[in-house]
Amino acid sequence: MSDSNVSDFTNPSTFILLGIPGLEIAHVWISIPFCAMYVITILGNFTILFIVKREPSLHEPMYYFLCMLTIIDLVLSTSILPKTLSIFWFNSREINFTACLTQMYFMHCFTGMGSGIFVTMAYDRYVAICDPLRHSTILTNRVVVKLGLAVVLRSIILILPHPFLVRQWPYCRTNIIPHSYCEYMAVVKLACADIRVGSYYGLSVALLLAGLDVFFIAVSYTQILRAIFSLSTKDTRLKTFETFSSHLCVILTSYIPALFSFLTHRFGQNVPLYFHVLVANVYILVPPMLNPIIYGMRTKQIRDRLLHLFTDKGN
Image (cartoon, helix red, strand yellow):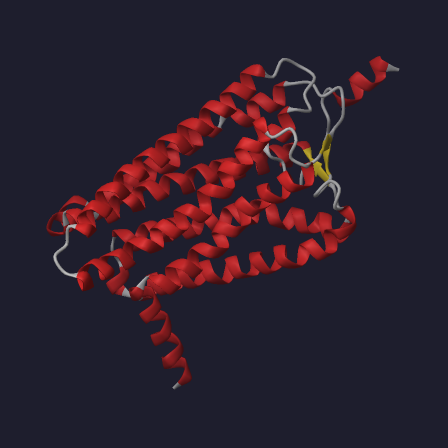
C-alpha cells in the first residue's frame, strides 16, 4: 500500500488547492471583496497607464517608474486571482503541475520586481528633492531603461531556481496544497525529500530582495526627510512632503502585510492556517488596488489630469 502511494505522488500531474482552509463555507462571501479588489485594480491601474500615456507633461522618470509598477501590479494580481475566484465560485480546485509552477514563478518574480521598482522610485524622489537641479541629467531616459531592466533581470534570475527545485522533488505524501494559490513554501512542504536547500534558498532570496530593498529605501527616505525639514518655509516643506508621502504610503501598504506573511510562514506555528492564507492574499491583492488610488489622490499632477479628463467628458 505504501509503495502504491509513493508511486502515485512521486510525479503528480495535478495539485489540489483548498482555497482558505477552515473557511470553505464562507468562500462565496470572501469572493465578493476579492472580486471587488480585482476590478478596482484593473480599472485603477489602466487609468494610470492611460493618463501617463496621454499627457506629455507626465513623461518623466517618476511616472515611467509608476507605469512599470502598474504593469507589475496587473500581472501579479492576474496571476493568482482568477484561479482563486474559480475555487470560491465553482469549487475548481485542481491545478496542473506545470500551471502551478508557472503561477508560483510569476507570483514571486513579479513580487520581487515590485520591490525593486520601489527602490528606483525612492531613488528618483531622493534626486528630485535633494538634488533637483541635476535631476534631469542624472535620471535620463537611458538611465531609467537601465534601472528598469536591472530590476526585471534581478528578479527573473533569482526566482528562476524555484520551479526547478520544486519539480525535482518527489511528492509521496499528498498533492493537496492548503492555500488558495501555489505559494513556494506551501508547495515545498509537500515534498517527501530533504528540502533544506530549497527552503534556505527561498529564505535567502526573500532576505536578499526585501532586506536590501528596504535598506536602500530607508536610506533614501532618511535623506529625503532631512532635506524636507531643512527647507526654509513651512509651505515649501508641506508641498515637498506631499509628493513624498504618497510613496511612503505605498511602501507601508506593500511591505507590512508581506513581512507578516513571511514571518508567520516560518515562525508562526500558532497562527491559524486560515488567517495566514488570508494575509497571504491580502499582501498580493491589496497593494495593487491601493497603489493607483494613493497616487491618484495624493499626486497633484495625476489628480489634476484625472479631473481634467472627466471635466472634458462632462462638457
